[in-house]
Image (cartoon, rainbow over all chains, first blue to last red; front, top):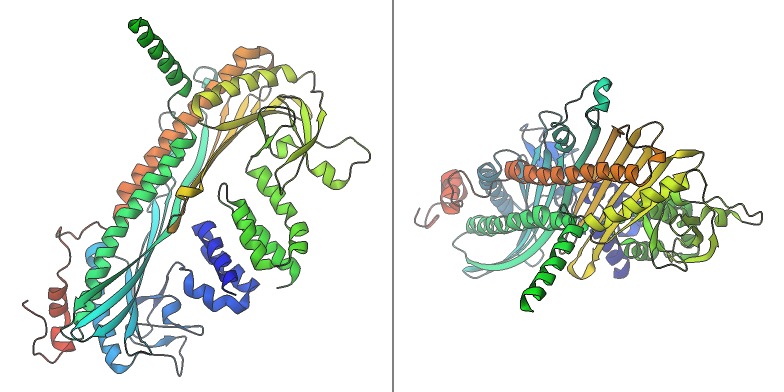
Length: 293
Length: 298
């Protein structure tokens, strides 16, 4: 019944991104038989875990989950511990360790903070797949300060073809920003005074409160061939692809978040007086008609 | 999950519907629940709550304009034979003095009846309505406004505004709602503005804002003040909404300049992309490979 999964995915595409976790949990409770389909196709904000062995932070998602445990890319251990948790083959684990080191540098260069994790797994056809995760959270230092969170999930498949490799990349970026400065900002020009002055300046005791939240996710896919010199080429190849994709998607997010959604607001309500503009146009028409005569 | 819990979960989904997408959400939910009988009866309270809180607009039977279906518009039926549904789903449009039945699923109106307004409050309500309609024309591209009296008070009025734009072909929709309660004896104006935007082309991005304001009315605004008082009240609202829209614009700038840039840089400090081969070689060249033609020219 792919139909049902389609409906669940369509629903997740419409409901507020700020409630994705509880809505996915509801759907899983409603249709437990489809839990795996749903959890595998709906991206949820990444959880930050701490590696018990190294003390380093890593990210948890469906790709490093086995049962209720998550594998750390640093120690290769599951938390809570698992006797027979799935781990990559020794050869792939070697590549995974290197990838985590390199993407940690990438994270520092672009995010200047946050957490990154790379997980790889063997595929049945001899190739392998992986996921590169990046997360950064900004918490407000003061009540009026903005806050936000960025989650990148890059899933790729690598297929070796002699001295070449073919890569398929699916990237999702979840971005959320909250601004609470509206209330503080708009009352700046009207300092709060005692009620005595109320009849002189009419709005001096105005109270305002509110916030604006921009949240959501966007997904894009791409495929590319690269030269393969040795195993480490997989890291530089996927690295270049992911960097390119993040640059493209950052521009796209900027356009949609700050351009498109804002345009819709100004399409609903106009700051300028539309009636005045209409009258102006009428007047202009009349004048043109008058001159022509 | 038993049937009642499934309906409750479905109701929660419906209440989260983005502007103009309640039918899409309802279709998805129908498919997921796959029990039309229990669904239809079960989700009616959610549909009613969605329509009344989202200021759903209805065609007023026998008139050319639309009015807002909300709690403020609900009429308690005086007819003895009226059932529970009847009294729950009857609303009125003070502008045309018409009450009607509203179907929360089909959004259709029927069974119009004349309503005689309260003599004492009607003159100022009508004045507020005229001023509100003029304000709507001036600042909304495609909006609906309704002005309601409140029960038990001839000095308290509720102004509700809604503007919708749905563009499913380009995967976006938006809704602006505002509500003002004006009390000429308590001399207060309480308002709230709620904006929702959904953009869903290869993604799901939503703007959701809340804003509330409460201020004191200048003494010049009185219930007996007629058209002049009413337009003063609407001037206050125009000023407030203008200020809010400007500050929302500033919030956009702040989120773009501070939050977005703070989360992820456009390029590293070096202003150039990563030299992957170099990072690779520098970080762990020795560890990963046993030399030979390892890392190219670097």
